[in-house]
Image (cartoon, rainbow, N blue to C red):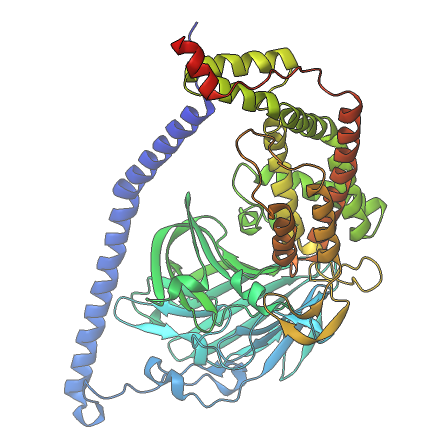
Length: 613
């Protein structure tokens, strides 16, 4: 019987069909339309140039040379209440005073400068900073890239209008806003903040829409096409990037990422990737672009996927990373429009998944085949937390439940390792007896395994089945923002940070000057576990090196010393329960030892004498 078509083949056929449709649509509809629009713009520009030439011939005294700076655009009418948009070449020289307006929701406070209508501050009200205030996502001071968050520019065929130095007039829900004005948005409400600037030939308008119960918002740009003849693209910038927010600055900066999803192509860069060149460019169909730290993210995404040019930039030495995303401008009835949706907030899996654009890919949950397990672990952790509102105890409960879930597998693994250790004398005797006959040695070894009822892989396979869960737990407890600032007991007041009992009067290599108790308890538990068996695999011919059982707990203690305390708690509980389980297995094995009669080992010299006789 012919089998049905697999999901992978169906997906491939659908993808190929979609690409074919897109190429036909582009060739038969979009390309001719774009050529027609380009021809129309060129004709208009040519007519405008001819008209300018005629005016220069009629009034030569009032004209300017081609190399001179063009005159500023005509100012708006005095009663219009709109700021004046300077000429393109004079934007950096604009000296109009700017103002700052603040939008406050229950989730954040965003400060916007009327110069450029771009964001210069984002404070997250649900998350505490190291100084006791609120987390600030944007670095202080001047932007290293020269742009701010959601800074914009309009690109034409031969010119570019940078809006960073344009001073706008702001209105909030239709009410004019002055310097330092602040508007509060209720949880169930929304607000439109409009920034507008006009000139004699047109206007530029930027509209933000904020929601009281969401971290995402929209930003729409409208402008007269006459300001930038032949306008083709609008570039949106992440400006200065994000700043570090955690006590362990080095660890936080190592998680800085610049990512973009173009169709099915996922590109991600860290600050270390910009050691040589400080820019990389990509092209494709934009789903979203983002910057992230360990626990927070800024992202932008169009209302629907669109062709885009993405430029990633960074400075390794200063731990800087940013992006500029250029998308096509929509032009209709002499107006240009571009919309970009943005997200500034926590890297919370549930929240970013709810946006429905795939930004949850940025949550560090491990390899593709591990991610579903990590998501299940996070769900279980939050489910326990809803019943017992303390993540420390929730981690302990999850650790115990995991141990119970895999009890039989772990028991089988430990028992198999112990049985293999009990067979070592007999296996050594077989190796001595049939060492020169590999086939006979293999046959006798397998015969011994069958007689003793031992599976040589019994110690490894159960552990392999548990590995995805262990890795998922490691990922979740290392990266879940739910643990940030979450207390447990006593001095452990942040499960996402190293537990610090007190400061040492000196600094130790790899350890630092903080005294942490949990890693020492973990090391002690590992040392106790190592004393219950010489070889964790129980395999013959692979004895543990001298001192290895003592060295390994020390190495793990150093490795985990600065790890998040929530992760160390899990490792302590898991190791402690393994110690008890392994202890009872060893005790029972002594009472019911394998009834294997050892054959006397015949020295090789005597065997040779027997053969010669």
